[in-house]
Length: 364
Image 1 (cartoon, rainbow, N blue to C red):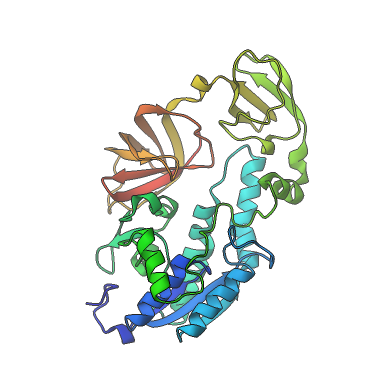
Image 2: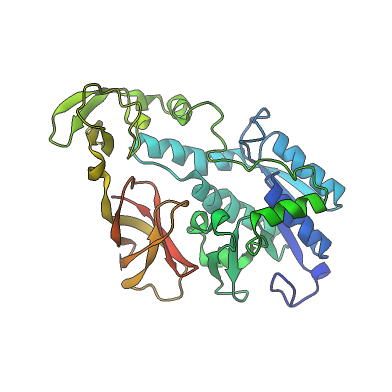
């Protein structure tokens, strides 16, 4: 059994490595090449911006050239696929629509869900690859079928949250060789392999937003979001006006355009139907019951109706204990403690110890 779980030699195991041009995916590709695997690197051209800065970008301009150079210097095949249309339909359109609907999107999850683990995965199978490899910090455990997904060794870099929408059959096929490493160790390996990207900064959310504000992109692609409306307090008193609900997110405090309030106000709710913004004090943000839909379950063959486990609504927070209730494709998670800044369009992701059980898209 080789390190990727196949009962054959490394040289007879063909893998496609999704190479973004960053240090993580570059190390994953070179590591497997040095172990003797038959490696093909594929970089996706996701948007047309050759001038994207190195500190922000992913899969565009200089990043594609960086991936090509890593493959060339380490003697493995590299392919560039133009996925701009697929990325626009699967990720950017969703991003714009979410803000237009008063939601806060998660583009990294949508990117994994669509172009990477759907389109690229199918492309990998077409060329006869045994597995699709990515540079995500997560751990896949188990056999070729019915694999499970777990947090990375380096909790500070763990990316399992962004993989919650991965389907079981996709999880069976993908591999995450960096999950057992710390980020510092990957940087050291990059220097050991003499990779030109060894000191390249990590890409940031949101990679395709290249102006100072995501609002510029939303307005350019959907001018209708500029529709003026009313800002209310929680008692339905008018506080002012706004220039479009896409300019606001749940929990926002700055840039509200409201003067003279006796205490700090935050965006408590966004009402798309009434095109209105509701403001309130910080304590009004606190919730302990999260409602969600479109559940993806990776915790076994049986979807439970109720389960004591933990969950989180942001990738950077610790998962917290509570009770999961599921009714078909909808559910709730009741936390033992209150959270703030929960927003429709974001995700609620469930864990049992270090295992990711699944997740759903927050509706309320």
